[in-house]
Length: 369
Image (cartoon, rainbow, N blue to C red; front, side, top):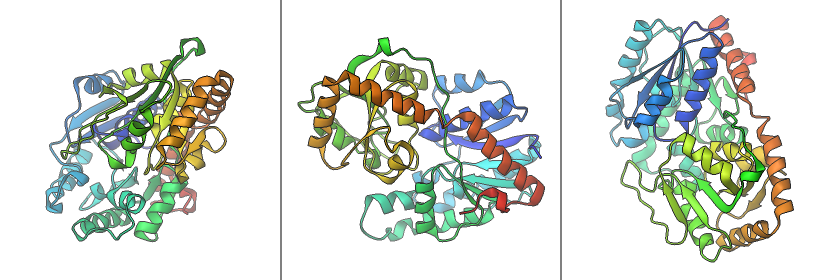
């Protein structure tokens, strides 16, 4: 059973934006229109233009905050009635919410699928060796309530699913549906002698410090694309790496098509769309030695200690001097990345959508862990 229309939440701050746009475009092309409902900081004009260009996709932006940008959880309470109203007004039969807390308080009888792309609780588990601060406990409680409200829960990787189970305990209907990105044509002849990294560098989990330290004395320039300042006043100021600032998705992919090497330095990463995009753009990958990157890249990337900038610098210098190794790594990465296709992602999601619509959710077909 295919949904006739889906309400899908999104935000313009991180990877959820591209995830939701690519997914909405594919669903609409297959005959299921999508109402994108945006929360948090407003999208840029190019982001709005990207949605306007999609057939069968409509964008509504609500003046409601993201859960990780509030200190008082009552600021989130007005969202559920607004989602209920939009679901009724636009005659959707399924809600795909890209943050668990967004399901709390929903009164609609429509089916609800939740995707957990990241959360402060699993972030804290990965980044700290101490219990979650008391002032953040409401985040755990609210996310858990969201999981319990859902008919199915999606994680983008087995690594993140395991982190969710460790953080929240049993989650009924938990399924792993890997992310995907839309490939772009590239030419190896266009590759240039520089190293690229892309991310929200104000987020400590993206590990900007490793890149900046490794850039000192690196044979090739190391370029960091992405925001240096965050919505809560976070800020990083690289001293050695070059910076490109906040770029559009098109501009970032154009840089990836030119870069010879792409580095993913994360300490915390539920999936990592940027290295997937870079692999499809023909880059050799250097990634940190964390579970998610082993799950996805295994023997298709070079792994480095996320706390050792000297090791990273040495690896980058070696690859700069070894074009044959770079080309082989790029070939392996592209082959691996091709397995994470939008067709595969949409197929898996469509089966889960059909399950929750036909059977009320939480069925064996939801790939419960």
